Length: 478
Image (cartoon, rainbow, N blue to C red; front, side, top):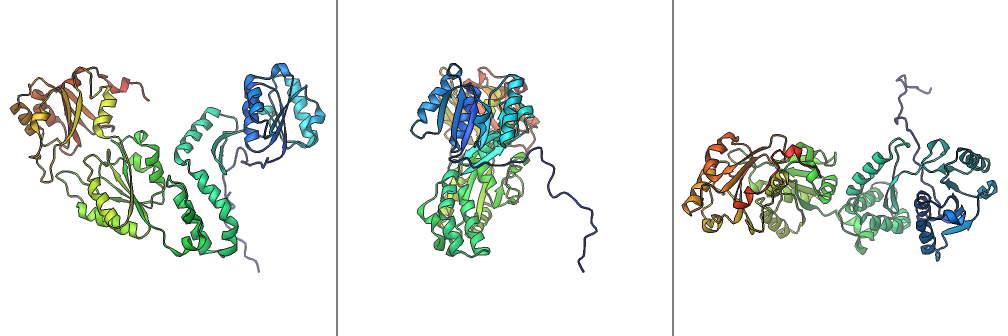
């Protein structure tokens, strides 16, 4: 007896406005009506897909772009220009028909002719006369991504395309071509099941690593016999605003198996990570209980040795007061591949938000990034205060909330004027950002308004007196 579920039927997929279908147009004949610029854009796209495009339009309507396009494709023979008006009989044998027609009666006649011949049709920018639509495209051929808004908002489709472009490395084309070349051999030599799946999963994982494939990547036996090597990527998370991440940083987060992140990394940055990635807080902050660097090193090494892609996500830039050098040296000593993705450090983020340059032709010819917090939790005793007290140098002291009074005392002892411009900033780039501007003589009192727990920088130098946006909210967003 067949048992039938009594559970209510539920759609396995939400309703679709359109069905995304990809046409194989290689060596197919396509009819294009019109010689305008919009028509030429579609004609170029059709020819790029391998179609032989026959353009039917009076010669006086041919735009310069169309003529140039036909000239460059003359050798391949993918575009032919015919000086004539179209006729219904032109539809015979066509795979698709595209037209740029403004007149309603002619558009209706075009649609009727296409329907009689069973040819899919599209009148550019006129959805009522379209059986199919051209979406926005991300081209990593043979990987092709199509985006449609069903004609409702083409600009939104273009915005989605730009977002996807940032996630797909240019080298994805090379990896997809490798997959095409080895597919037959994989099907013949690896039985369906875990081994075949493991080969393809390994290739897909490496395809998002921003490097092109090598001959070894196509070696089926070698890749199936050897375990996947682990790797570590040190990624700069910037000051907190996810929009300030580099494209490469987003790609690393999207391909991570495990993310070891600092206490200062924002939730919106973590939100960009692959959903399946395991997130582990290894925060280190002054005067708080935190992970020791030795423990973090051991975690990175152990996870990478298990074949995982480990992302060490650091606030700001990993190469500025991030102990990245120690981590790189340790990983390389154990034979683990490691790469670095830079981030925007707090000093530069602050300067951008205030519209204030840290250098100036007349007031500051150099910049110093200085730690205000040593391993012992106090001001380092190795700093060159003579150089730092030069007001023609912009000095930015990181982790300086607790040591700011000592910094001011050292600068004053070297003869720096208490009227030298200064800025204190906490939680740069976040919703709870605090910024104070004044002089170093006023800074000791001003810093007490900043929470001890806030990551704080202290900037000093004559360049800071120059133009700044008084209200960052009024600055034009990039």
